[in-house]
Amino acid sequence: MREIQYKTFSFRAHQNNWLSKKPSVCEFELTFKCALHCRHCYSDCYNKIQYLRKELNTQEVKIILDKLYKRGVLWLCFTGGDPLAREDFLEIYSYAKEKGFIITIFTSGYYINEKMVRYLKQSPPFVIELTLNAINKKLYERISQVKDSFLRVKQAIKLILKAKLPLKIKTQVTQDNLKEIPKIKSFLKRLGLKFISSYILYPRLNGDLTPCNLRVLPEEILRLNQRHKNLSFCEYHLEKETNDRISKIKYRKLNPKLFFCAVGGGDGFRIDPYGNIFLCSLIRDYKFNLLKVDIDYALNKLLPFFRKRRFLTESACRYCPSKEFCGWCPGRAYLEKADMELPIEYYCRLAELLKNEI
Image 1 (cartoon, rainbow, N blue to C red):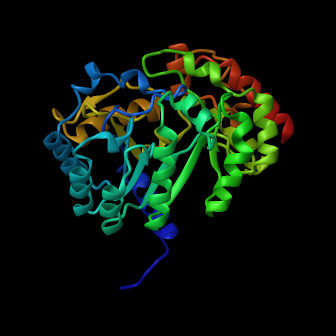
Image 2: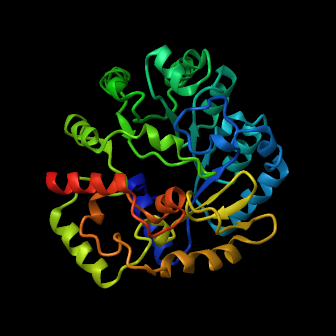
Image 3: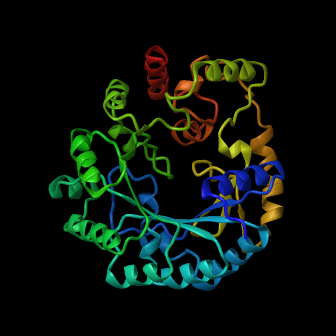
């Protein structure tokens, strides 16, 4: 059998699925439950017993996994909340592995213990992505709002590395930990891991704008990028060629699609803890429940809306020449402004600064 690099395989698979309009990526929120209550978390508003008791049971999750398998989904990300918070997580994980999904696990690390690591070592995921927002106990627990959570997460990292499981550690940059970033970067370097971070913060899914108050000033983001070249700058990065930007901007002036992100491309979709399928993690009103309908039916209804949707108003974002440089998107506008076409002042300022930097 001829072997090819994963990078090549991944590119070809995504390209073929995009051309054939067959999404191959799914993010499955198994639960909103999480031991942590991070100050910036956008889903913690549903980390409450009245919402958790409505979530899918084990058999219902398996029914949906069967549908994903039948539909040809290849990449499967278990996320939350924290998916490991479910008592049946290993049963669900094992069921998905047997079907051949390429599995990524997003976790806080809080629930990882020796038993969990021994199991995952025998049947490893593609990668475990763990969030670490401070390496100082006092600061970490100020952010997580849970006493002694730092020691548990630190031990989880140690166990994962010792078992040689594939690990990525991510950092959410906020006003809380801005000064901690150099220390986090140094810590990860000692572990032989890359520094992966993002400054993007959303309102909570119920519309609560509180997390937005923790956003780092655009001027600080620019300064951080100069010091840490791999700081995430949303979908568009400073490394892209200026000529590419200009050509895209010209195209969008002639063809002002509202969704210019992966949602509009349709290579992936998301499922919430209740079994609802939707395309944008921030626009959840357009959804179908997979316990009641098939994936094809849902996608045939959802995809045209996002692919064909154009600006309906003379929004400032419609022909904005700085659009390529900012973090604005219809989903963020919808969650923050209750309107998919309205600009967000924070991103406008950021775009202006980035454009001048280029």
